[in-house]
Length: 107
Image 1: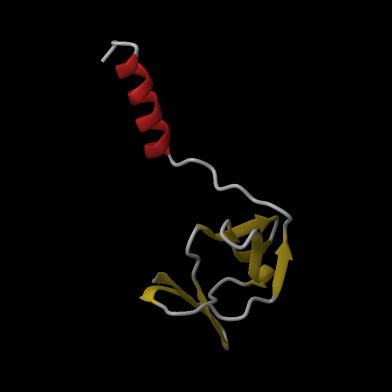
Image 2 (image 1 turned 180 degrees about the vertical axis):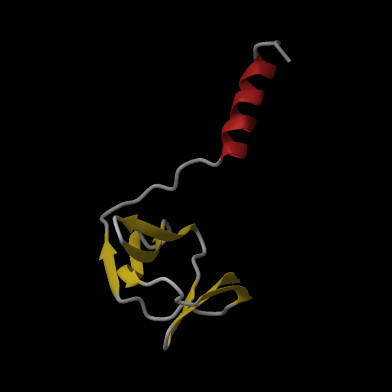
């Protein structure tokens, strides 16, 4: 499956998710910057965190590659939820609206 291989300094993480979202964020606050890498896994109802507000500095090298990865690296933190429901995609919303309009004879 497709995923990201992220390398920062000596740490290399493989981040994948089958049914969910992967986010890679850079936060800046005054003179400080932080990196955050996590995913939301709707299938397993959890959130995995590989880099949690990790401080970064000017000139640091962050390598992000799209790769075919079989398995994620073990995250630093996993937060489990009782039940998560995947939100509908824009395409699913469009198709539902299209079907409703066709049934009403408007399309």
